[in-house]
Length: 489
Image (cartoon, rainbow, N blue to C red):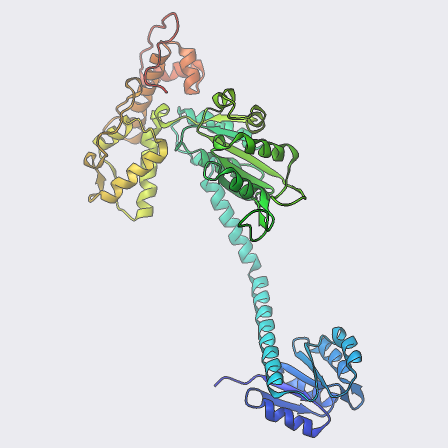
């Protein structure tokens, strides 16, 4: 049986005590005291939730007594009741005594019961809040440790070393460039086709910088019209426009002391570009409908799949904004320009997707791996991920076979096609891919080692050594301009 809440009635008139008892006893356990001293003894040995005191008692007043109760038993909810017209004195002492409610005699039974119910609920909430506060303080070291472990896990997940690439991949030089730029508080512009992993690189920049403990906030600029994009980034005040029912903090303020990734920045209009430029120049944002600006400390990382230089010439992208965003411009190569990475990427994607989907698959058949490495992948890494996940869902055996591949897909351009070793260790297969990539680069640059090395991110000596190690013949350099690269965009 649930215990009744305890109410202590302090009144020197016995009839008043009895009247209060009769009214309250069905819902509360009622204790009575005739003066302050009796009440103190009861408080010392009993857990009282609510104290209901008369204002006029022998030797003291109700306000004075409740003031002492507040200092010794602050958790007890204090109510004062009086039949005299001394409300001004009581009101003057309410703050000092921390009185919850002041009631006048004669009191109405229903009103009294309602007041006591609310007082008991307040007592319960206070106790619950106190308990939760104690638990939170006790758990704080554990929570701090968990947050630190979670942050370290996220930073490790987006470490540049985890980006899949072969030793001689163009991504090697790109990651080295990004690692250097990430340490400095400068804007970075990532340029590349859709699906090349620009957001992944943006996260790697953030978590490789001094802002790693701050927020990483993402906004696709092509997903919203100008008005909504401005509200999303800069915030707005209530009533700033139709539908603005409350104040909203913009993403710039949410990313304060962190990083803001603006994807598809090339989709914005020149009118919006002016507003964005002002924020980047001034380092402050003004929410829509507000006349007050807020300083923000944000590192902006932008990305686009458009040729912004061509957009500037066409008047669709502001030149001053481009140079404000592109302190460090980075071109992310499409998958067809890094064929030596395809086998490695496919293996990594298969491993991750198998775990996520709960599929027990050991790998690709040699024929399927050859097919994967010969495709052009116009959708880049995103298309490769989608294809592998689709094959996993449809697979019935432990090895993915060629019959699961999507038919009628585009192949690599002739100069970029390769056929990895169908047997042997992964290293042997990667070397086979490297040989094809080296031959393709030499072919594109008419045998010029210097130009081929620059494309592959190698020194001329490094390329020469690699040709010797892999046994790739050196074509005779031809005079004149290199052959036109058929099939390139």
